[in-house]
Length: 197
Image 1 (cartoon, one colour):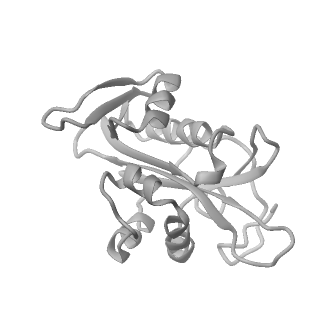
Image 2 (spheres, one colour):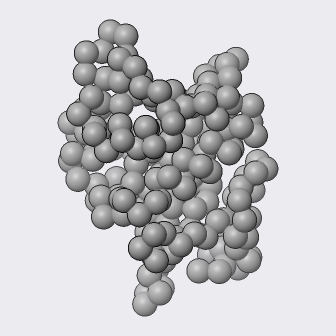
């Protein structure tokens, strides 16, 4: 877990906070979660298409509904490709992965977080989803810290997102971050989250 195998090289993994624009073969942050499991957080790569497909396919239907605000069984290939094609400035995305030390295989993705900057604005739309069996151990909080740090570096001052009214976990998470929640205009069952970064 100390080398970057997904980029096709064996470079050391840097375990520091992410402050500069990401260099996909260098910006890897290894963290220990509250349950002692270790994960790596890094910028998403085009090569993550397959692992990202598996990640979304493994999510429960309820988690997919809460993430995409509609009932769906799968994420389209078009969306998956768009999710892996980021420019690290206006569209920034990170994934969390875990390595199975008993097997030589591609690490499994267990979370993804991203923001897309609104044109000529200091705000960006963000989204975050953590695998069903990786919640409640600090992974979402760490991803948001990294996302907020990167947002500040790129000139974004506010991360915004829509949250379904029945998404109690995300509402609680938003409050723990100090975010504001307000009823979304024109959407009876949606709240608008705003987080100053």
